[in-house]
Length: 279
Image (cartoon, rainbow, N blue to C red; front, side, top):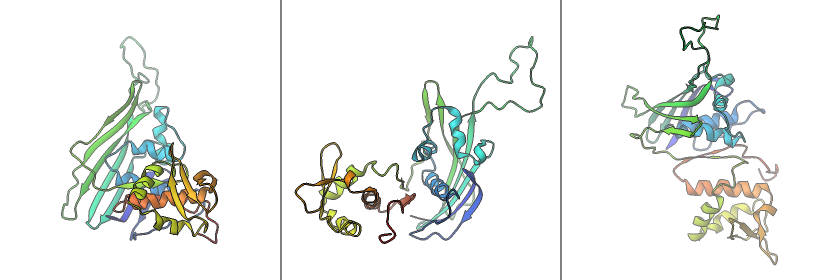
């Protein structure tokens, strides 16, 4: 299944953006901090439209670890959870329309609430007290071209003192697979994906591509403790950590493409480490 269009509202630094006519391979080019990564993240959320855990995952891709409730504000425009997120996408082959609305789950506190009639109300404003945010709701619909009405389902994630409370839309089963790659997570699952390729004796075709970066590479091998080694024609195999970041990132991208042939691969900062002569 391929993406055709996306319409983004109130996500990260994007107030409103519409992109149409996606192809099988798409490249976003622009100055720093203009929203390229945010576009990829919004596509990722739409692919996993029923999974609110992704609202935490995309922050972790940026190196942000959620350790308090208000961290959920990071996905909302201007860090303001009153800006409700709306991401609409159209997929083709077959045609499918997705509508995702992300809204906050507000904290339940005593702030601004008069719970005792004998006490005076301290607020002098007509505005209700903002209790902050404890989590997010994912309200979503997935429909075909022939359906005219959105049938919304809901899932949610909430940080509580006892841990994470997760509620899924059990009546929905996802049919699309998406993978998000960036320099921080290239190593995740790389060993496992490469292991499957080696078991099928298909590593040689990937070695051919890696030779464009380092012509000395003749083979790839696996070791204990998730180690990956390269044969460059000397006495010992060389661990991937000594081969440079570009080899690791390129191998990770190829393994993701091989493992999810019918999915959508989102690659952030794909040019990192590549010299202009190899780009």
